[in-house]
Image: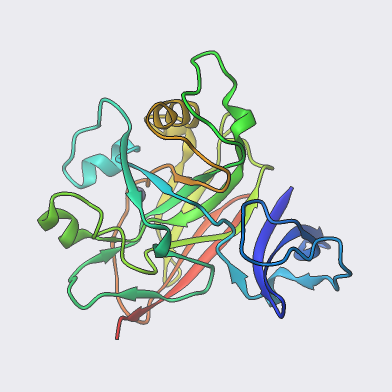
Length: 265
Ligand code: ZN
C-alpha cells in the first residue's frame, strides 16, 4: 500500500494513494498510525483528489529520526572519511521535519548547506533488541524519501552533528510511504537533482550496512516505535544549495520529493 499525509479542512489526515491511469490519487482516508492530536476521519465520505492537488505534509509523525552516516563507500570517500566499522548513528530532531514542496530555510550562520538524498525506513511495529534470527520485515511499515539537509561547515566546526543537521526545515520527507519496494530484496535506486541537473545516483544494493543490519544494530540501543524514521545514508555527489534553488530526490516506486530553498529571515 502507498499512503500520504495531507492537510484537510478538518486538519491533517492520512490518505491511501492509488494509481488512476498512471496518475497518483488520494482515494480514501486512513486511520492515524500513531497517537495523533487530531480526530480521525477514516471511513467518512471522501472525494478522491489527485495527489498533485493535495497540500502534502511529511508522511510520518516520528518520535525520533535515527540517521546513518557514511553508509555508501563513495560518499565517505568524497568527504575524506574512512568507512565506519559499525553503523554510525546520529539523531535529527522531529522539529526539523517538513513536507514535500515546503521551503528549506538556509540559516544565515552557515556558508554551505548541502542536500543528502536518502531512502528512509518507516517503522511499523515497536522493536527492541531484534534478535539475529528474527525477520526484520515485520517491523517495517514501508519506505519514504528524506533529504538529510546538512550545514556542512557547522558539522565540521561543531565536531558533533546535532546543530548542523537539526535546523528547522532540515528534514524534508515524502511524498508517500510505500511497502511496494523491497529494500531487503532487489533494493531501490535513488537520484538527486539540483535545478534539474543530476547530482547523485545511487542504489541501496551499495549500502555498506543494509537495512537488516541497521534495524538490528539500532534496536540494541533504543526502542523503535511506529512512525520512527530511519534515513539510510546518502550516496556520493552531495553539494551545496542556495536560495532560489529547487532540490528533487526521486526513488522509483516512491515518487519525487521536491523542495525549494529560501534564505531564513
Ligand atoms: Zn545523511
